[in-house]
Image (cartoon, rainbow, N blue to C red; front, side, top):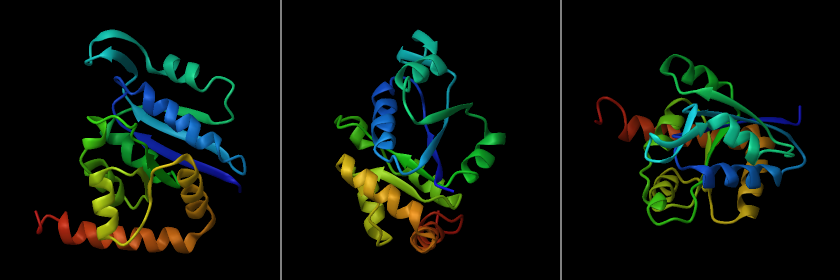
Length: 180
């Protein structure tokens, strides 16, 4: 249908850089109508999670103003999270080139994989290590890599199926109840 439903999940607080990255990455794909599904807090705070706060929707509306990317904002809720995530084609986890943010662990990636969702990530140590373990390369350094990998997954059911098969094997081996 030339339409992509893409998921981003995380805390809104202080993540304006990530929201701008999302816009930049997704606008580089004019071949598709992009619907970005954002699951996060409805309140955006500049400091911590309770100072200088405003509406996350208003922050996103400002960032995506005049954008061809349509965003849908959902409050994080354990009841609806799975349904929203599973209705998407895949997820993206861009991380700005910030030393603290680049140290994020792979837990969000593993959660999304456990739901059967392919994920394209920034090239952080943790994400790259796990991608290497499953013999897949969906970590990105440049805007062109983001664009190419999104299009690769969007255009090939074979690549998506192979990716999820590899990710599921990793989850079963390293993250199952028995393994833990």
